[in-house]
Length: 106
Image (cartoon, rainbow, N blue to C red):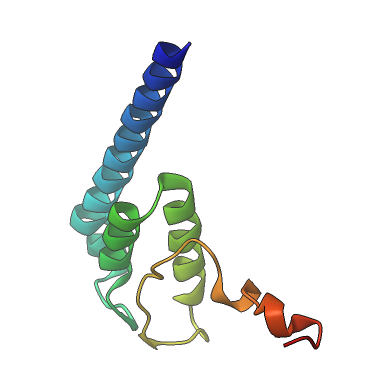
């Protein structure tokens, strides 16, 4: 059985790499064709396509897609602008609490 778990882990890694490669290919396609039709002006730093590449390289594909879609939603008329880096962790820091002080105990 240990051999089966190693094979499944290896298959998962291959699938993750393949998914990341497909996503990077889509970003490259947008950079060459999409900017011709949509323009190359982005209101954020790094640009949305740079953000996508960083997110894909830094995180698992599904989480990267989540980050990219949120970023695209923010890059709309009436949305915000400025410096918006890719988060380091998949855990949202707003949900991290200090358990020791959460119930009034020290």
